[in-house]
Every structure is written in structure tokens, then in C-alpha cells.
Image 1 (cartoon, rainbow, N blue to C red):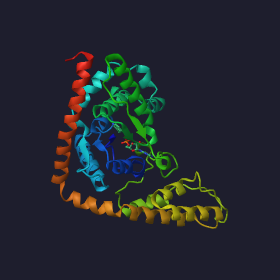
Image 2: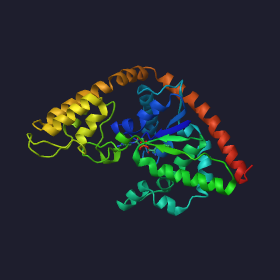
Image 3: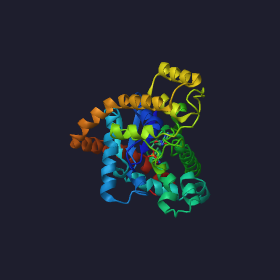
Image 4: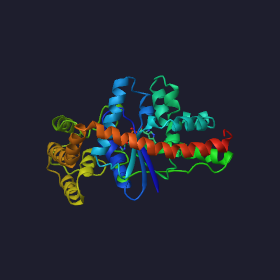
Length: 320
Ligand code: TYM
């Protein structure tokens, strides 16, 4: 199987990115041909500061490596290092119905909030489709919020194939049941744009403060509580094994505990969960040339694959 996914360097990665997507990247690099990239072209729709975009892009690559992405197994690269994708994006754009993009939630949400959307945001799912199709990806590991975009990609690929003959592989989204939509500190989807995130590598003290501020209800301590659907329990469950999760569920159902104890247990579990990655990250920070070299090697490998797909698409639609 060929696997592909990307993450936007719009800020530091948070628990939602890790449990929804990055953890899948790491698992799927074994036994598959895997391509993972930092989506700096997509980030340009929101990050309008050159130095910050460049730094965030480098940091996102470094974070992925620290979390266990192995450049011997997977190809890691910057999206903008593969210009073939932007050209492929145009080929797809010529056959993209406006209505399909108007239904996409990222654009719709912004419009509903009364914000002005630019063409970059509007056509964002087409660039994402080009990303996926350029590498003949079969599987795209993502969180639930990206599933609609993969459906758009399938539509565009299907209609191109129908019009010009078999050109693109139709991909499938892969989400994880337990963590396709990780809640944030307010119980809504964890998202940089909702300001409810807890970052993977933030200072442990700052992370602990945020955890202590996770919203909870005002029921009395002694009252038994249902763990399912409780976002604090859901977050705790991400970090522990079955035995600890069941013990926590039993505690909820028994009652007689304070949410403060649970938050402390969550902070401890999260700190030890990311401790090794934090150590690996420090080593990578001390050796930026290594990270640059990995990205440069990744770009060469990714371009080779994307150039072959672009040539196939160009030929089929009459450009060569
Ligand atoms: P981005 O950068 O917003 O998010 C990266 C990945 O993290 C997942 N995610 C979550 N999963 C579960 N719970 C959450 N609260 C949560 N928040 C984020 C996202 O679903 C995503 O998988 N458009 C993409 C980047 C992209 C891409 C692609 C992805 C560009 N081209 C091609 C796949 C294939 C994005 O904005 O992800």
C-alpha cells in the first residue's frame, strides 16, 4: 500500500494532531511505501509572515522526526519542494465544479462567520487532492475533519479518469475510531483556531496549567458519573492502557472523586507519554543540518514520484 498525509505548519502540533493523524503516520510507515509532508503551501493561506512560515515548517518536520517518523522508512518532505504538485493542482482545477468547493466546511465555516475568504482557501481542497494524487496514494491517514476533503479528491480523480482515461489512483481516508476527533480543553474539537489546544512539546508546567483548566461540570464530588462522552475521561484514555482506562471508568461510575485528581493523573500520563519524544527532539534541535538533509533527500524522492504522475496526467489530457 502507498500511504500519504500532510500537516500544516500553522502552529505547534497538538494532541489532536498526534492522536488523530501523526500516530497513524508512525504505525503505517512499517510495511508500506509512505510519504509525509509539511503543507507549507496550505499554511500560506493563513501564515502571512515569511520568517514564521519558514521556521514553523522546519519545526514541524523536526517534531515528526522526534515523534518517531523514520526517514529510512518514510519519505519526509516540504510540500513546496515539489512544484509538480502545483501544476497538477491546475489540471484538477480545470475540472472542479464550484459547487463542490462551496460545500466544503473549511470555506463554509469562514463564510458563515462573515469573514472574507480568498481563492487560496476556496481552492484548498483541490491542492490537497493534487497532494494525494501525485503520489498514487491508496491510504490517507487523517482525523475526521479531513475526511470530506478526501471525498472531494476521489470525486476529482474519478471525473478526470472518466474524461481522460485511467490516470489517478482513488484514495481512501483512514481514521482511528477512538481519536478521529480529539476534544480540546473546552470539549469542542481540539483546534488551533479554537484556542483550546494542548501542544505536544510545550513546557510541561504550561501544559499542566492548561490541563487544570479543562472545563468540567459542577456536579458534586460524591455523585457517580458516566465516563463515556466525558471529554476529560476521553483525553485520559488516549494516554493509558486498557487496565488504567477501566480503573478510571470504574472510579467515574463509583463517584466520590474530584476532577482535580483526574486532571493531575492526565498531566502525569501525558508528560511521561511524550518524554522520549522530548529527548529525541532536543537532540534534533542541536543538529539542524541533519533535519535539513532529511528534507532535501525527501524532496528528491517525492519529486521523482510526483513528476511521473504529472507526466501521465499531462499526456492523458492532451498537454504532451
Ligand atoms: P492539519 O494541519 O489541520 O491537521 C493535521 C492532521 O491532524 C488531524 N487533526 C485532528 N485529529 C483528531 N482530532 C483533532 N482534534 C484534530 N485536529 C487535527 C487532521 O485531521 C489532520 O489529519 N489539510 C490538512 C493538511 C493537508 C493534507 C494534505 C492532509 C494538506 N494536504 C493531503 C492529508 C493529505 C490539514 O489542514 O491538516
